[in-house]
Image 1 (cartoon, rainbow over the protein chains, first blue to last red):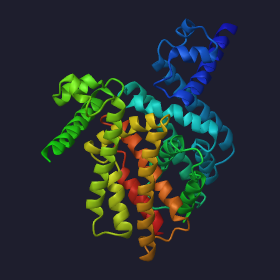
Image 2 (cartoon, rainbow over the protein chains, first blue to last red):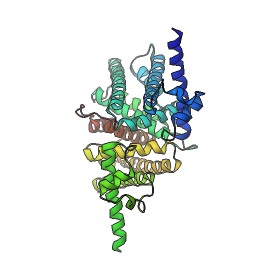
Image 3 (spheres, chains in turn yellow, blue):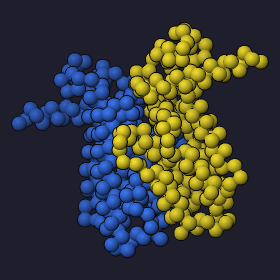
Image 4 (tube, rainbow over the protein chains, first blue to last red):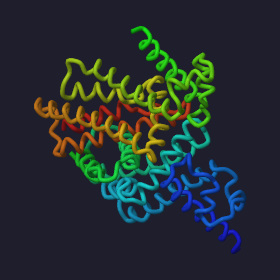
Length: 196
Length: 196
């Protein structure tokens, strides 16, 4: 079914173009016309794929989430407990330019989700998935004796998840040449605290 | 100088109206006309105060930040160390409807700051102020023997700050009737970890 594959590829090209335009101009200035031009599409050719900017943004967000999950699956393969938790968090933290660009897609999505229950539900679902993964790794770590914190693992997971979300904002809004945010150190010191 | 006071009051009325409109419609659908109507202003009467929606959003953000700082000053007065740190964080966390509304102002501001260095600088400055306050309270807590974590206090402060930012997103995007986010528990368990 080569036609379907083509469509998927074109959608991904459009997501790539959307990213570049949003990174350059911001979500509000990114028009469908500019995204089409950036992707080498005629203006009207976008409509069959994404009838509105909103559907494109939702697709781009889902794509970021899926891509992050693919990377998480890769780096946590064969790991459990603290090692898996560390690999998971290091993958979510915006530690390179690619992931800072992803943060710049995710923040406009969050902003829209504030008044759009459907988008908020997509965010919720993603967070529940990650919360469950963190809780699972914490349980494994407790079995190994690597975590002995008194708190409920769901509370620890919620805390860690909030820290990972906040790190997206810190990285997306960091000025060029600003001192290093030390996000990896923040994670490491937290894992240290859990082990004590 | 009653005229100046009037202008300040009118600005605050407008910020109040802006909040209500943004909470109801979202930042993108909030037009200057609707904000004027909500505040009981004639349409053109907004211009002398806020020539654009952008200036209004920046003022609203600064107002949220100042208001939060006023409340922080109140609740931390006479406190130091962990007690001050706890009071500080409990004030920043979106634990009631008023502060969830504030989060709904702050997220659109962040989104705009991604491509607006002036807004990003306002955010940076605010965060540096808070980072310094947290570091100060951690130093006091170490003196009292209430914190013995091995990590650099600037790293701990950065972590805590990111958690506080992430909590704004979690709260602003929470669905009605969703289980409690347990943000206060997240803070308490972190303070517990620092003391160990």
